[in-house]
Length: 286
Image 1 (cartoon, rainbow, N blue to C red):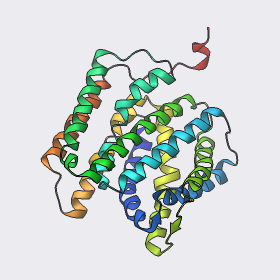
Image 2 (image 1 turned 30 degrees about the vertical axis):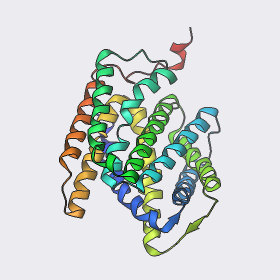
Image 3 (image 1 turned 45 degrees about the vertical axis):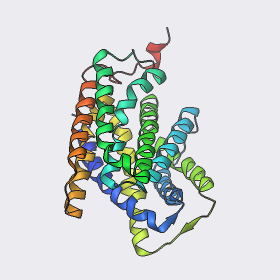
Image 4 (image 1 turned 90 degrees about the vertical axis):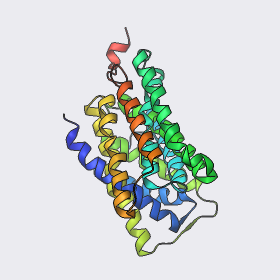
């Protein structure tokens, strides 16, 4: 399992990132300002290593979908807990099947894959039953699931760009994304650069930014996406455990049941097909 050497640090860095991002939100307004500085620092680090940008249309599309994913995620995180954000974000594989069919000419989903999608969305509904009676929490849930759609899209684009040098792709993703985020957050821009915010920002820009995105890109390059996405579900599990330990609390019964059903749906949808094979360019043109 070649992806395992990337998966373990990815799980640790990503799980802690939900907590650093949640804490950092109280020092930046709008939330996109926090993400703009995250992208700028991460982009500078990766550009210093790669020393080049990849200005192709697929990379620009990748950047736009990444920025959209980040925007919906960080606004959603303002209304939900880190563990809720992690679980809802990892509905991403449920959207990757139809997106892969549209973007990389995969075969139509099988009956098992369709069944997995239905079961997975049932899990999202179960997980979301308690928040349905709380307006802002429900809004956070919707925003976070929309983030998962965009995340699924740029994950598929990573597969299309797997022939490109990964550090350069991620450098471009962050540098161009930073410019977009600064432009979007220019209204009522406010950031309090105190010690706590600096710690949050440094984590989110390095281990939770440049390295996290690079690890995800590398995993998708070396392994089938269906395998990577299933393995990456250890992120919400680890995040739930972290939150339970940090807050000395246990998830609700609805939360546990919803997570279990979602995971079952993901596993069912990945039994066959998915994005398991992406045809190389020379095979798609006859």
